[in-house]
Length: 75
Image 1 (cartoon, one colour):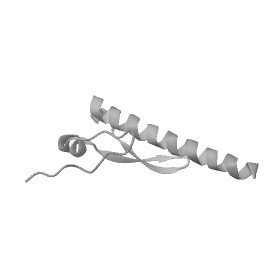
Image 2 (image 1 turned 45 degrees about the vertical axis):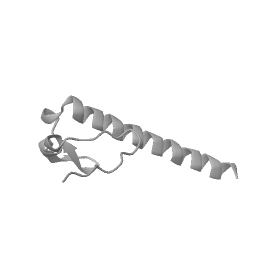
Image 3 (image 1 turned 90 degrees about the vertical axis):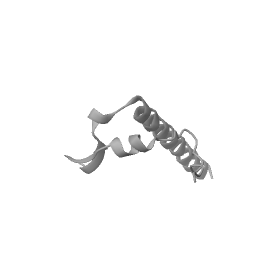
C-alpha cells in the first residue's frame, strides 16, 4: 500500500529516499559556535534544488518579519 507524501510548502521539492539517506551532517566549530552542515561532497542537483527551496522559504519569512517590524514602527 502506498500513500501520498505530505503536501509541500512553497518552494519545497520532494526528496527521494536515497537522497534523504545520502546526506551526511557534520559538526564544525566557528567563532560564533557550532553549526551542523551537510558534507559538500554529497551535493547533487536534487539536493541543491532542495537547499534553494529552503533558502527561498527563509527569505520569504524574513521579508514577512521585516514587514511586521516596519508596520509596528509606523504605529
